[in-house]
Length: 129
Image (cartoon, rainbow, N blue to C red):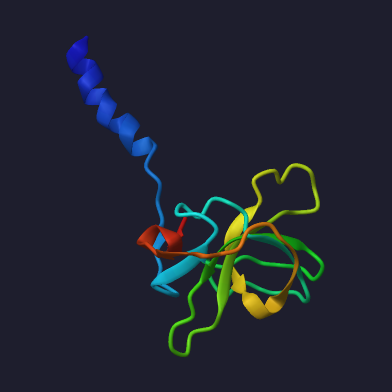
């Protein structure tokens, strides 16, 4: 019985594997409210619609609120991007959609904590499922 279970176990591991792709980094550093970038920096409101160019970004509708968790440190000619979560209109969207958006798209409504911790970005910051 134990041998059958061992042969069957690798099949179970394969089922739980997540598939995705590591995209190019948008920046090598980010500013956060804490070392782990889990605390909300601010609440913003979108000033216009935005269509995400790829899976690293989020689609936003004018007027939607976005919670900001990190701000990428601008490098060279790159745009200025923030990371946050946007929620749909329905109550079923409890987790929200997380991704990047252009800083000039939003107006800050409320600052909860200052983004004073400079943290290196990692490959997982730009991972797409």
